[in-house]
Image (tube, rainbow, N blue to C red):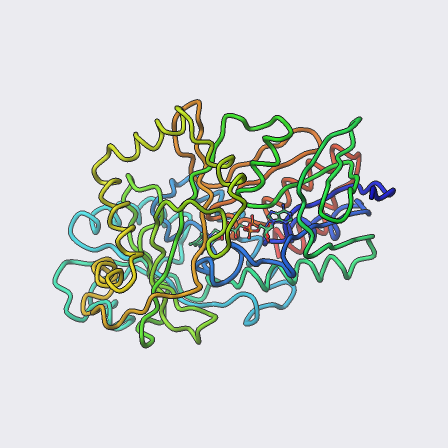
Amino acid sequence: MIVNKTFETAIIGSGVVGSGLLFTLARYTDIRDIVLFEKYDEPAQLNSSPKANSQTLHIGDIETNYSLEKARSVKRNAAMVANYISHFGYEGEIGFRRDKMILAVGEDEVASLKERYKVFSELFPYYRYMEADALREKEPMIMEGREEPVLALGVEGEITTVDFKKLSESFVQMALDTDKNIQIHYNEEVLEIREVDGVFELTTGNSTYKARTVVANAGAYSLLFAQHLGYGNNLAILPIGGSFFFTTRKLLDSKVYTMQNPKLPFAAVHADPDLTADWNTRFGPTAFALPKLERYRQAHIRDLLEAMDIGKDTLEVYYNLLKDSTIRNYILHNFLDELPYIGKHIFVNDARKIIPAMSSEDLIFADGFGGMRPQIIDKETHRLMMGEAKLAVGGAIFNMTPSPGASTSLAIAEKDARQLCDFLGKRFDEEQHLKEIVNA
Ligand SMILES: Cc1cc2nc3c(=O)[nH]c(=O)nc-3n(C[C@H](O)[C@H](O)[C@H](O)COP(=O)(O)OP(=O)(O)OC[C@H]3O[C@@H](n4cnc5c(N)ncnc54)[C@H](O)[C@@H]3O)c2cc1C
């Protein structure tokens, strides 16, 4: 059945990025007719679920893989989520002021963090410089049994922890509370997009819907939609799984991040008080290649093979990654972390960087937690791309959003909303957006 109405915009996916776009369009533009499709029965069942990610609002202050330039941009973009939470009164429900720190262990890391402090404290003047004694007072478990030199840069009193599922739900509700014509179709998977005479036709199991513009915020599936329309054929996905371990009792009050090895493209181990587990400490994520697009659900095998697009160019990227011994050992090590029974005995060595007195008996595999990072491979340059990727062509936008995509969801939405407004000849309400989201 073809639905007669032509929507101005169709959004695919109600994770935090798709829901954030729905909210932004409904509240800050005069786009009136919007339809959103989500294949599951409610928002944020995949990576935006608090069980899938680390619940961290990445601002750039404790992420040592960010350059100053990247940190400056992530700070501005992620502040939009913090501003939304404060402005609309969601503190304590969606966003939480929990302390956090970046921890350097050993002489080399301490020297490097000191250098970083000199450069980054202009951008983050609130850093608390903590040497051993201050750390012992703040987080005693970090210092128990510790022999190596340590240094930490702490952050206190900021919104650092976000339930991105609740955030997605609030975005949807705020959009529905406007006077716009919004249709939300849960349990309706978009199977195909076609462009016919400048109008997009989206086919689901139920019907075919028409829209003048379309935005795919569907994780790894966004690339598949783009490629079916002839865009992004130079890209492929390397699906990287991430798992977590809980501790048998709460060991830390703060989020504790470790320094990134510049050679390793995925996050270094960190410990996070988990908002779904009475703030018990959750360690991770691990990082390992896994032939899946959804961590705890089977994807269609055809989708998986298309997304990975294993050919000569993709294999060259895998080869380049594996020929580096640091990366090879890391991948092997993380693969062993996943093995039942012995995994935690291996992972405990990583966790000891944060809590030296930790024993494997203190760890429990966090069953049902973890997600898939759709890391993007550029087949032309044979490189793994870091961070989010966007393909935007006229009225069609496709977002692939590994970390820090949840933190920057409102900035991704702002950019897309502006492009849709330009394309449709609509207006973006700068003043209200500035007041409520940018400067709140
Ligand atoms: C282990 C791990 C830890 C992370 N930690 C953090 C963190 O601490 N902070 C942070 O900012 N980011 C973190 N991230 C990244 C973050 O989770 C993502 O950037 C973010 O959730 C992406 O949101 P999204 O809406 O694009 O995707 P998703 O949340 O995956 O949503 C995509 C949605 O599209 C729907 N969908 C897919 N295909 C279709 C279709 N054909 N039809 C209809 N619906 C469809 C899906 O059901 C889903 O609801 C982490 C990621 C991982 C894997």
